[in-house]
Amino acid sequence: MTAKRTPIVALGAALVALLVVGLVELAGSSTSQAPTPVKLTLAQMRASLAGSPQPLAELHAQAGQLLSGGASRLQARLASLRGRAVVINKWASWCEPCRAEFAAFQRASLSQGRRVAFIGIDSGDSSRADALAFLRSFPVSYPSYYDRSGRLGAAVTDSTFTPVTVFYDRRGAQFIHQGPYLSEAKLEQDVRRYALDA
Figure 1: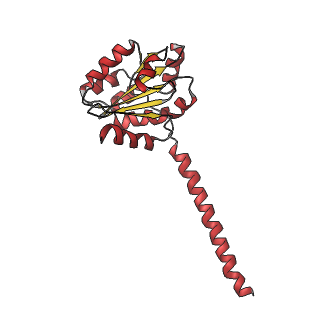
Figure 2: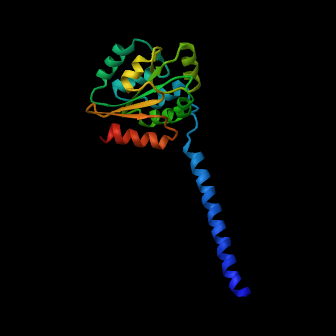
Figure 3: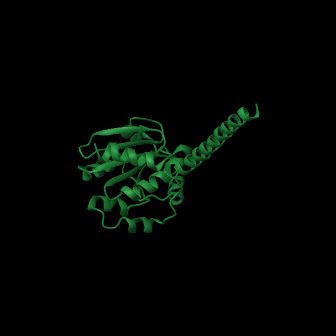
């Protein structure tokens, strides 16, 4: 009877150990998925993207800025980027999911910024000062257009919600993603899928 129990006990212990290892791996992978904010200054971001093609270099020169001009200025910017992959992220400083995904955009815009144009739309922020304070806390290597009314953001993203990300491929085809990107890997996967490889 003792001889039969030993293999069962050993098998049970092995299953428990396997379960523990699996849970530890799962916990480790979920925490490593959430990117941490980039600890670079705007000057360091610009320096890391130096030598980018002209239309992209113009975006990097305006890193962290909050631009005005509304739809006409954004449309002029998009016209200057025709034939290039573009990613537009609609956000607001009061939006917690937007705050949660900003580290992914910081990192993706640095790793993909020589091939992809990143642009922000600060949509529905009643205070320009709040938006600028947010951008100082979470610097990005591209500018955002200030959209107090929310109309520009809704027109571009076909949604009144935030965050929303719009991908344009080189031919101008559009893909809209509703909701936050909490993983840099998922954001970069979608950049490749909808903007670069399309």
